[in-house]
Amino acid sequence: MTDPTKSSGARRALGVLLALVLLGGAVAAGWWASRATLTSSVPQDEATAGTEQVVWAEASQGSVGRSLPLSTTLRQPALPVAANALSGVVTAVSPGEVGPADVVYVVGDTPVRVVEADRPFWRDLTRGTKGEDVTALQELLIRDDYLTGTADGDFGPATERAVKAWQKDEGRPQSGVVALGELVAVTDLPAVVQLGDAIAVGRTLGGGEDSVLAPTGQREFVLVVTQEQARLIPAEATVEISYEDHAWTGVIASSSLDEYGSTTFTLTAPDGGEVCGDDCGVLPNDAQVTLRSAVVIVPKVEGTTVPAAAVRTAPDGRTFVVTDAGEVDVTVRGSGQGVTVVEGIEPGARVQVTGQGAGMGQPGGGAPPAPAPGGGSGEESGPGDGSGSTQDG
Image: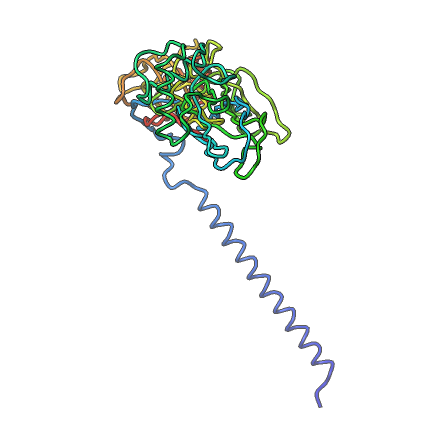
């Protein structure tokens, strides 16, 4: 029979021995780890410690600048330019882009046509009448080869014969009279016109209804942007606007905020006139036209570009770069996002970006703020990698 006292003592001795073994292993592992750490912290080549690598870059031809590609909206309010003067049922409508003598709607079998004229038609045109409205009618008849000579504003026998020939070709009674309501005056054609709410197929007209709405010739150029975009656009920014082969420059004249948080910038020409200047006639006569544009936040500057870190500032304030031949003074013309346009060196020159031998300047300090054309500081300009200015959208 086994003695319980001896068995318990043996177990205690075994436990102590196991604890000693574990403690010895932990000490050995700690010594190995500390040894490995100390070894890895010692540089393998103490001769290279503290030596900065020299980095060179090549100057190139490029530009810096920043612009936002956005759209400018041309608003041309469409207002009623004529009231219906005919009675009957509307049998056809044709709104949209129209030119001289185009039919915009038909009442019964009587077509209503648009004519380019500055004043509205206000009476029947018949033999013996004289005035600007007769001149507008004669110009229409001359254009369609029903009348020869010049428009003199006098409704005489020749004009009456021309009107009858016109009516005959259209299959209408040859009265020689153009009744009030058959012609609608629009100041500038072609134009995009709309019809009044009452002018719809099947509607019965009694006269007096607003019939044709057309652009009035008033133009408003606006730039509508989000809150985020508005924060990027300084008050002195210019807007480059283009349409087909034409280009104009606009400036911000005023701004307003709508209930949705969008900002509307109203644009004018730099002299305060219309953005389109003398070329407004090339624009469509639509109520709203979208034009391609770019907001110039920082004017584009072209020239020799180098990394901004290569431009150093001496204690006396001059700026210079370090080339293979030594220090060369430069003038900073623009800078942005790590690139600087300088005068004083040519494309192809090697400039030192980092490393020893930088002279008395401050390496890597970048160039001081430099004036950019148009009054911009150039500090907010986009990357200039030699490929042109940046457009942020």
